[in-house]
Length: 467
Image (cartoon, rainbow, N blue to C red):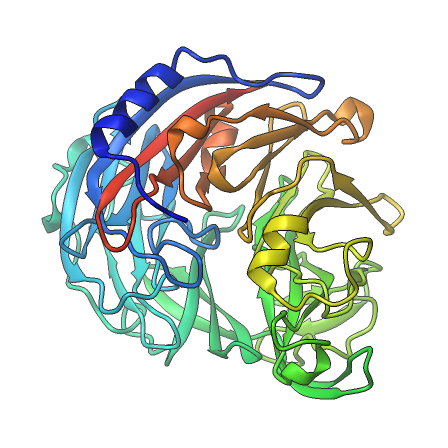
C-alpha cells in the first residue's frame, strides 16, 4: 500500500510538478515559492501510522529573527538541526551526537526559541520515557550571524529539562509567551491515564509550573459503561495577539469498554479552556475558573468545557489543529466519522480513511460555538493543521500537504481545495511552521516522501504564499 517511487522517478515527478498550476476555486489561493531538500536520506519507518520526522503534534520547523530552523532524524538515526536565511534554498546542518533510541513515531524532535536570551532548545526521543534535551549557546537565535553553525553550539544531551527532572513524559512542545518567556508543555502518565504539565524558562533556567489537567473522575459512555481514568489530548497551546492562551482538546478514556467496539477509539468531545495569566489559571468558555496549574486540575467534571459534543464511537482524532484569528477568536479543526456513515466505528484505519470528515469549529463572540463540515474529505487517518493569513482567511493543511482555504468575508463557509500535488509523494502528516506566517505571510511545511519498509527517503520544506 505504501510502495515507494524510485528516487529518480520521485525527483522527475517533483520537477514536473513545479510547472503544474495549483488547484484554485472559490477560496483564497496559494502560490508556490519553493520546495527545498533538507535531507535526501532521512530516517523512515512507519509506526502508529505515522513517521517520527513528521507528526503534526511536534514543532520541527520554526522561524525567528530572519532564520528558519528545522529538525529531523537522518538515516544514521542521528538528530539533525538545520537553519537557513528566510527565502534561501541552502540549509546549514548540525548533526547532534544523539541517535533515536527506538522505532516509535511518537519520539519526535521539537524545537523552541527563547527570545530573551536567544537560546534554541531541543526536546526529543521520548514516549513515556525520560526526555533527551539540549540547548544552544545564548545569542544563537538573536544574533545568528555571530555564530558558526555546528553541533558545537549545542550543549551536552541531557535526560532532564536542563536539570529539572520531568520523569517519564510524552509530546514535548515549546511555546513562547507574549512577554518572551519560553514555556514547555508535556504529558506525564500514558494514554487513557495521564496529565498535562507546564514548565517555564526564565533567567537561563527551567522550573516546573505544575500539573493542570486531571486523569480522574467518572465518565459514563453512551452504553452505560463507566471509565474512571483518562488523559486530555491537546490540539495545541496558542497565544493570540492579545496575550490570551487558548487550549482545545479531546478526552481519551482509560476504559476501552465505553466505546461500542474495540476496533475504534475512546476519544470523545472537543473541549476548550483559556488562560489570561500565561497558563496559571484556566477558565471555561463562559469565563469561569475551572482549574489552576499546580492546584485544582481541569477535569472531566469541570463545568462548561465542551465546545462540540461527540460520543466515543466515531474515531475522533486527537491532537489535530487550532489557531486564533486577529480578534482573538479560537478556531479548531477536528475530524471523525459522522453518524450518517455509522454510529459505531469498528475498524478505525479503514473507516476513517473511507468515511472520515473534517470540521471547522469556531467560538462566537457570545461564547457559543459553530461547527461546519469541510467539503473536502481528508482521505486519511491522519491530522490536519490550521493557520490564518493576515486577512484572517483560514487554511487547513491536510495530510499529504493538501491545502483547503476559506475566506473571512464568508464567515469561513467557502472551503475550497486550493493546493493538491500528488507528485510530491508526501507521506501523511506534515509539520507546519506557524511562526513564519506572522513574519512574511509565507506558509512553510515540512514533509517526507513516501518510501517502504525502512528505506530512507527525502525530507523537504515547501514554501507557499497565502492569499
